Amino acid sequence: MAADMPVTLTLSHYINGARVAAEAPGESLNPSNTADVVARVPRGGRAEVDAAVAAAKAAFPAWADASPELRSDVLDRAGSLILERREDLGRLLSREEGKTLPEGVGETVRAGRIFKYFAGEALRRHGQNLDSVRPGVEIQTYRQPLGVVGLITPWNFPIAIPAWKSAPALAFGNTVVIKPAGPTPATAAALADILFEAGAPAGVFNMLFGDGKMGGAIVDHADVEAISFTGSQTVGAAVGRAAVARQARVQLEMGGKNPLVVLDDADLDRAVTIALDGSFFATGQRCTASSRIIVQDAIHDRFVAALAEKVAALRVGDALDPQTQMGPAVSEEQMEQSYRYIEIATGEGGRLVTGGERLSLATPGWYVQPALIADTAPDWRINTEEVFGPVAATVRVKTYEEALAVANAGEFGLSAGIVTTSLKHARDFQRRVQAGMVMVNLPTAGVDYHVPFGGSRRSSYGQREQGYAAVDFFTQTKTAYSWS
Image (cartoon, rainbow, N blue to C red; front, side):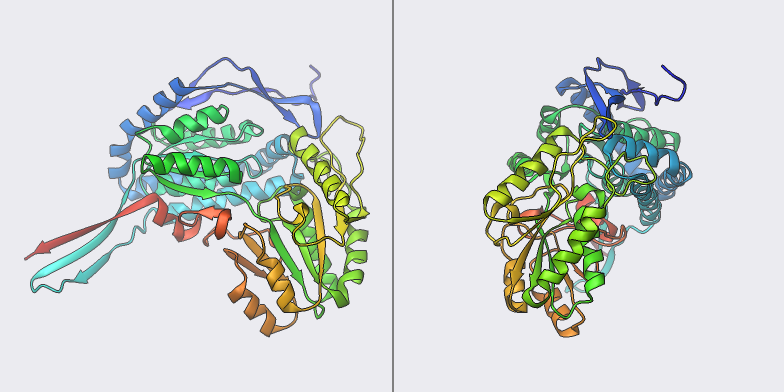
């Protein structure tokens, strides 16, 4: 292999503080150049799950009873190492997942900040001192860790989502068994290496690679007290049923079909910039992406023309090329899904304004030409089913009330946005839109790490993620009475 060729990594499971080698029948490919094998990946099964859960269970008492300063120090060191290595980690992430290098580095920085945030939260486990209705009786409430938690994470944020699940779990004294998504194992493995380097004791953090059956084995394991899952609605529903059946705590994040409302009083340039970012950055592979754009009639045609010009000008290419503005889809399956929904939308009567053609670039990759489809109806499949690619559709409406009704249609309720100069409509939208997160004059995608994340309706189930809200999921409350 030539000296300038990228290295192919050979990954191992991480069980009880050791790398456990296994047969590696799977491969992680670079979506920008499918001739580049990023990693050879082991496949595990129930035996590996049993070993990892046993290790996590054995490590739990000491980790839960350790000084919170010890846990804080481990997380803070992990955060520092991530930030110090942001360029290398970001490059690996972009090579493996396909988002542009600035996006990859940006996500890596976010992961580092998440660990540092929860390093602080490890020292702030809150409780209450309350008066009893009975004289001489005192009441205290305090938080305790759950035990072993199972984390199942997706490929579209391969370091940030493992960070925002594992950091609070560890901060509050739980031990972890995590299964990252198949397409991006090398990025997840880099995070595991850093946690061990930061001083995580043996058994506290365990990482396994495998398919959905392995995820199912984690969900079904009697010694796993809680499951936190991010992925598709179909898989999430199955995870939820299995966890509830054995009365395990469960948290599900299952995507969105996020509306962006553009009113006729909006600043046109800002509206176009917001739609371009929310719909097409990160190749549209964000659960908070703006996949349906609801535009008031008076501004609709001008908005579509201006957005189409920006979409057509997007430079699609290798994620590591500094000139690239949009990288490839993560896999052939995701690429084909985008093109399939373009055909569905035009077959339903939508007008393909720009894009949507097959791309042939210098290297073999899973590239999608971003597409904008106009003149669609709210109940069409393009506006009710999650595409998870660089495909956006517009819906024309006459009034704000109609726009709000369209925004609230469907099963999802993760993120919703509005672009307007009207304070009245902005405040009303914040109050009445059925979504867990609301953006005013901002893209629907892009959230801070220190505040709650989650949706309503079928987008989410259970407690919120991130910020202090994470304490609600990863701890349980104990109420203690005492008489003096």
